Image 1 (cartoon, rainbow, N blue to C red):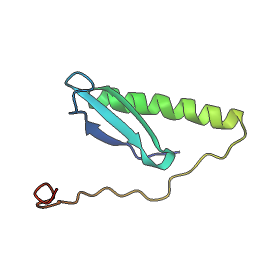
Image 2 (image 1 turned 60 degrees about the horizontal axis):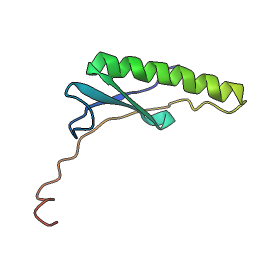
Image 3 (image 1 turned 45 degrees about the vertical axis):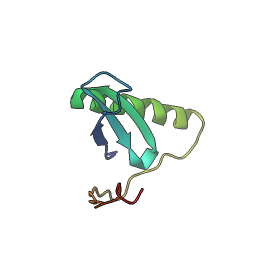
Amino acid sequence: MEYSVLIEKINDGSLPDGYYYAHIPALDLTTHGMGIQGAKTAAEDLIYIWIEEKLAHAEPIPIESDSYYSKIEVKNALQSA
């Protein structure tokens, strides 16, 4: 089974510099870790724990079909606020 993971640097001051969020959209889960590899490792650990919990309660486990990532540039958004 494979899941997409979106990695994003944390810049809001909530954690020391060098930490990244790891979001698993298909499961609606988010975790974090030090560096990109730390975030990926934390995501993998979280996925395993989450799946074990679902199996223990005989709940379905979502399977990701297609996943796409894109960026949208929002021009002048701050000027109108």
